[in-house]
Every structure is written in C-alpha cells, then in structure tokens.
Length: 349
Ligand code: SF4
Image (cartoon, rainbow, N blue to C red; front, top):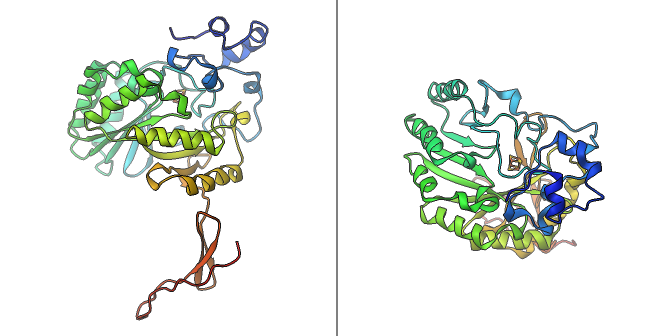
C-alpha cells in the first residue's frame, strides 16, 4: 500500500507518534507519497517529511531551473533548440522531499487535451526539435493506453528522432513496467529511459526485473541521481549505486548537484564536497560506471559539468592530474611540429 498521510507513516514505523503532529504544516505544503518498495528506514530520508523543509533560504527558488521561463505553451519547456520537455502529467508515484519541481508536482494530474495539442503543434511546427523529453511528474504513471496515444502522435512528427523518458517508476513501482507499457514504447523514434535513483537499496529484485524487461525490449537505459546529504553523499554509497546500475545494464549518466528548491537546504552539499566524492570515485570505478557531476544553473541557464577539473592551462601547455592526484605536464602537438607531445616528469602533487 502506498503511504500518503502522516498517520500511515507512523503506522509503517517511518515516523514516531511524537514526531507526527509538528509535521502537519509540512504535509499540507508538500504532498506525501511513499510506495511499498520505498517504505524502508534506509530510504526514508528521501520521502518522509521533516521540519527542516519549512526553512526557506534566501537563495532558494520556486522554479530553480527555469522551466516556466522557457514555456512556449503550457506544459512544454523549450530551452535548447533541438529538444523540448513535455510535462504530460504532474503526478508521481512518490513525492521526493528534495524535488526541484516540488511546488508543481502532484497538482493537477494529466496535461489537458488542449494544452497537449498546443504542445504537439509547437513540436510539429519546429523542425529543429529532434528530441522530446517526457518528465516530471512521472510520465510512466500514465496508463499504457494514454501513453500510446501520446507516443503515436509524436511518432507521426517526422523530425522527432528520440523520445526520452525521465522516470522513477522502474525502482519505486516496478509492477507498472508491464507488457502493455513495453508495447507502448515500440515506436519509430528511439525511446531512451533515464531512471532516477539515488541509493543502492532502491534496486530491489523487483526493480532489477523491471530494468531487465526494458533492456530485453531494446530500450537503452541511463540513470540520473541527485547528490543528497544524509542519503548518498559519500563515496561508498555512490560506488555501490553505480556498480549496481551497470550490473543491471544502466549507464550512470548524471549526478546532479542538488537544486535550490525551497526547503531543501538540509539535503545540499557544497560543490567542493561533491567534487571530492567524484575524485574518489574516479580512482575506484571504471569509466562506464562514472556519471558526470552537473549543476543546473539557477534561472534556466542550462546544465554544465562542475568537475572535478583534471586539466589546467600552464603557460602554452597543460597540467593534468591523474586519478591518484599526481600532476603531469602535457603539451599539444602544434601544426608542423613533427614531435609527438612529450610525457614530461611527474610534478609534486
Ligand atoms: S518529479 Fe521525480 S523527483 Fe520530483 S517528486 Fe516526482 S518522482 Fe520525485
């Protein structure tokens, strides 16, 4: 059973009776939903409300990554020329306490037909759009019938090459990955699925089976995680998560620095802490298990890698740091230079 009230969280042992009353204002502000698969103490911090959520810092924003600053039609974000985000629903199976869309998710269910039509018309009228991203709410909460209807309409737009899902469903509600849903994904544009997951304990045997179903259907899988204090902000937890993901044929894609969503400062690390963790992982994990650590620049200015940086300019050449922290000089081969760029002596770390 999915838990949606403070009382149910107490009954499930995820809150004490004494804690619950003070959390009523939090529950009124930000919706609660914890699926059975996620109702475990080691995962509770992601889904169970805390008083810290009522603390809003000056730098926090209602729309941290500028979804609404680039909205040609309701429910459509067009930030980059070649891709759009289609918010086909605002519903999720779980409501994550750190979500950067926490003020909009859970609000109004599916995108109304008029808005959906306007969004699809915008996509059809804009040949530069090659990729349509279905995201939060969670697009995989839509019934296979509704999903098929949307995907068929995207299929009919010749310049759409890729449809990308961002979803937490395979881990939080794996039973939704049914044969009917898999059949809905079988369209002309390539369907990619980006699984949102933050902790290795989320990959239950049922989740692994759901991921297997998707890969068997030929759907490429990537993952996105958020770096979260008190959840996964240590190299051991992230190493276990990324190893589990690649063992399940999911390529770790992005590790997000936590966004400036209201009431989420208790989850945020510093960027320096994130870089230190990534540096440690660089020495431990193979390349296919390494995500890129990124920041969505507040205000909708785009997403960029934020290090750690292994390369700095040194005069006309470069200084490059290896995974053990040792520094090396490197020189580019310039035009007309017959000499290969030379490996020069190791510098002091
Ligand atoms: S949009 Fe994603 S991160 Fe936000 S509440 Fe829904 S499932 Fe969680």
